[in-house]
Image (cartoon, rainbow, N blue to C red; front, side, top):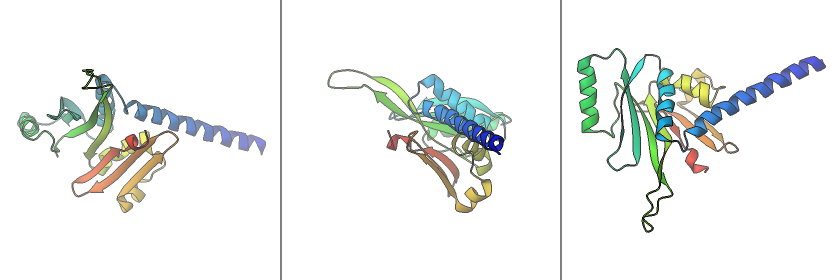
Length: 187
């Protein structure tokens, strides 16, 4: 009996350690450098059902959003050109044929009065797609105990952990599903 309890305790402790590792990965995307934005976005793209290839990354005209864009690996040249033109025309708009991972741009230490430029940092904000493409990332990195059927029935899932200072929402809207980071509300 004692051995069973010890074994159960060990599994629970191991599960908590795995959860903490996932939080560490997510928290890196809270105030990251530009190099990590690509690594983070690559992980998201690798969790999608089809294979995606990196297309482009850009900062918005206002400088407050940085986006990394992927297209389906098997996209034709015609589709690729159409996506590129669409992004050039309305960069802030979403592309239904591609994957866009958006980061908020934060300039730490900036003080215009003292002519201090500050350092750009990037905070993961949002990405959109089909439920079956987003759910593997949600389950692996954010909420490992969520069940697909329950999330689709409710139309949303939330994970809030004030101790670790992370908040994420996984929601359905008229265009599809999205995962959004609200952790800045706790920091």
